[in-house]
Image (cartoon, rainbow, N blue to C red; front, side, top):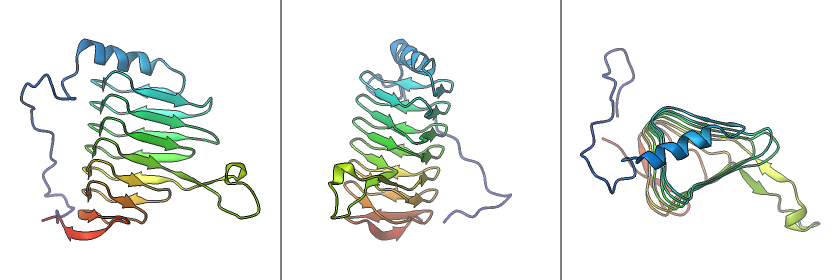
Length: 199
């Protein structure tokens, strides 16, 4: 497990090989989409952001979506920020895979260099479940979600409300994360459980 201290070398992304098929190889259209997204009310977009076609962003009147420098958002990703006070923050070099859903009513934070595979879903809310009323009538139960830096989510991961995932954690494909994940651990399964610690 990496040590935290003054002698730790800060890592930076390695240069990528030229690859037109990679989501990170943004075309002029991808960069224009990012700029246009940044003109919308409640949305802030950093430098060198790539937004692929068919990304859908819904932000309520007091919501805020902050996308850091060098992020990539693949096609058909869906951001839904609904009341009461939603804020979604993506750090630098965050990758959001195809068909991901990020739904916030209060707070979802994703740290620098974290890579989210395709078909993942991150929610900071859930429905109330009392028996004395229809589920559709019940108020949402809202708890913030925090995902650290340098994490990796395989395809189809689900993260539920109130979860904190530490720096450097890896979540295996198809896992459902229902509790906090410590830094630099690998978790898999439904519900997700610790498999091992990163070496």
